[in-house]
Length: 297
Image 1 (cartoon, rainbow, N blue to C red):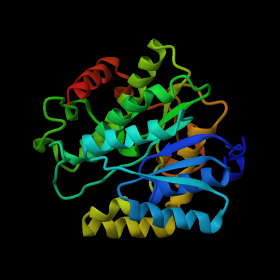
Image 2: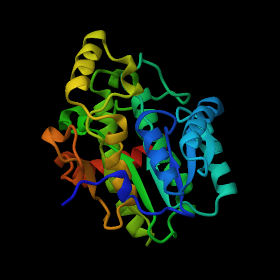
Image 3: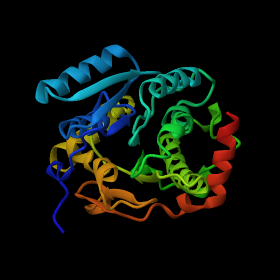
Image 4: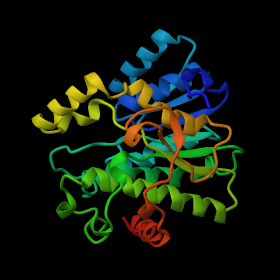
């Protein structure tokens, strides 16, 4: 089977696609690739200024692109609701939601609502946003919700502690991986929820492998040095790493619960393929417990 490339993306005319964290890194290259194929891009940005910069960069290469900046703060439930309310007031439907935004190892801080930042931004924000937007995607034929996981999401059960997962004591070097594990649990539980309401939408997931983007800026100096050395000799560009999410979002043969990842050594890089998710991520009891907790936060 030939490798998936940007030229394999189908025409996306009249498709409304929301991408969170779309101003830099993988989200930016995902937005750029889909804009080239005539999608209506709802480009989420934390603020208008960074969104304008990214929009101008895309328009420079593809002047006919249709892009609207949707500014809201994923670290604030109030701001997420405002963003969702605006989207629903402007768009009667969405065809694809890509839950891409994330943070990695910043100095400890909390969301506006008091939750540990990895859990709050990488996972909980998307849980809230997707549920708020469900009414304008669930009846759209062929619609998809793609949640971005990580190669770091393969955690041990002992690391998944719902009593602490959103609190300060959960902040440690494994917090990023745990939040991405939560994303996978969410993707599978969302699919079960979609089936219960007879939705036209499917839920699936992807992970990009390993690539150097702005998300690593808070890493230690030693880790940054190692990553930069690997980047020069081995790691894929962010543009290539974005292909797994792009394929998940646009593959006409995609099915619910598919998990797209790089096909190469240790899933670090390579053309997208469907892979098994970490076994723990398929535990329905864990997913339901996380969903039930999230509804209370």
